[in-house]
Image (cartoon, rainbow, N blue to C red; front, side, top):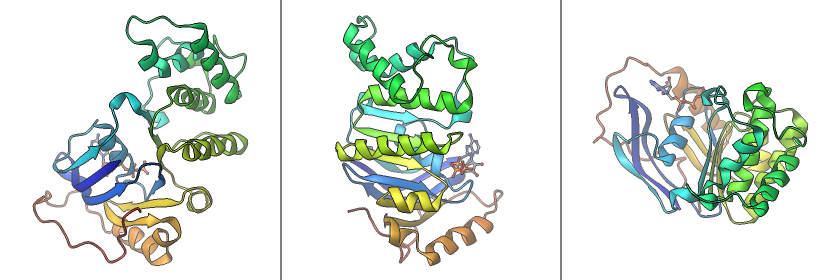
Length: 254
Ligand SMILES: Nc1ncnc2c1ncn2[C@@H]1O[C@H](COP(=O)(O)OP(=O)(O)OP(=O)(O)O)[C@@H](O)[C@H]1O
């Protein structure tokens, strides 16, 4: 469904992702994990087509209208004058189109999603007036109405209390059961072990990709930490033709 082939992505020629290969199978539920600065957000943005690879390629076998992306909360502009209801309605844009009509059925779908994330009564509030956790819930409601085949979540539980996190994890499991493909950038190893069958462990290069228990082995976690401690942000630019041999721990998703 999403294939990375020797992918290198750089900012000002310093690689944030280095020679990554592997495949997210259709219907897979994958956590993307690694130390700060290990390239997790860069990976999701590359799959979304927001960043151009310096080397290699990303192949996505899903039309862009069927892809949903939840950016990190810090990257979202809250100053835009938009009500909660309209913000969620934006998730239906492929059904509404540029000149389409917002039907009662669509409004019902929006309302069910707003209620589903516990924000009944907030429909007319401006998104700029919400707390971070409330805004994150609105963005989840928008994903719910979007009904995408491929769902990319960048730190989706940031600013969420534990009850909301549990409810949203249940929603992610429902998407998985419906056969959607989900990848989520996360920081909590335990949460990943409990809820995500597949894991990509990054440290700018790929440390492991496969079933979560194997990917999050102690040697792999130690290697990710050691690689992150050895980073030199002023290192020479990447010579992208020189693909390293695959690490022994590297496993592809089934
Ligand atoms: N717009 C940018 N310009 C320059 N460098 C960037 C930019 N965005 C990210 N980087 C650098 O690329 C590297 C990877 O960043 P990225 O945000 O993908 O990491 P991450 O694993 O998501 O980190 P975190 O866990 O801290 O959110 C970091 O060294 C970061 O400083």
